[in-house]
Image (cartoon, rainbow, N blue to C red):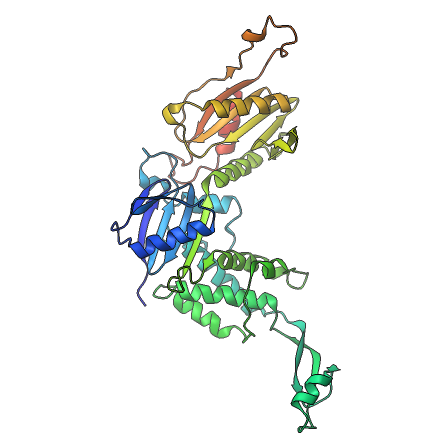
Length: 414
């Protein structure tokens, strides 16, 4: 089978029918996928789509669309290759200790190939160590009486064959839900690696996998998986299998197009990455860093800033924004939101944090002059806010900057 034709785009870019091999059937499939996910991945435009802040990979009908992150439209596109993989590893969404780390660093691999390879290596390791067995109930004809005799089935099936028994009994083998989930994910990988270097690896693992009773794996069934001490070694394999199965869309258009998408919200990923880097930078310093601290606001509504940083008696609020502001100015909505955070958390400083080259912004104080002579006015306001910028890529190494935590703390001090 032919390998997937690849298209590489950036978030918030447009892709129209006729560009880079993108056809009307591809567009129809993507629009259907978007409908299934409440329209959050793309915006329909005339004869095409405009990507939102979701990045990753979509494969459909021989086409692979790789959506790369990009913080600023003026940046050099080559600088952002590999940023997504680095952020996913830093946030624990890619297992950095998996076998074959050198392969994961190869930037010509798309995100699906990276996850596929990690999954295959994980399953291969489980097979090498020996697959676990579990007890399960099986109902069938046997030649020796064991378990519970099913009288209705015995009369129906063995009225002539008196030497057989139709029973429900326990068996101890590898045919259980955990392995069924792993096999379904393995079969999906088989479909989407044909014609690639991973296909032979996938077939060898399928050949070594035990024969199982086929079952349709649903999200509810995945929720029922509980790993115990014996099956603890399956944790990462099940995590990858769940990711592959839940992002697979079979028969998305009348059974003609099968699609696999693996997309991540860059707003959420940037927020988590900054939080992880701040936690790392604050180790052993006595600084407390909390994500999504929450306080009641009005009725059932609440306030929940991205990051709250406590240093001694001082509290700081950080709100992360992946998309850089227009004309380097914060929106009035964001400034009001940060003011509310400062009032409720009694924070001295608030920081709107964006990716990109550093811009020297100083803290400004929220004004109180208009209320100074009004009886019953607000107390003196000692809250400050500023916009902060940190470069995601280290200028010297060209790799993802893992010292962002220290740089953010410097922004709070200056």
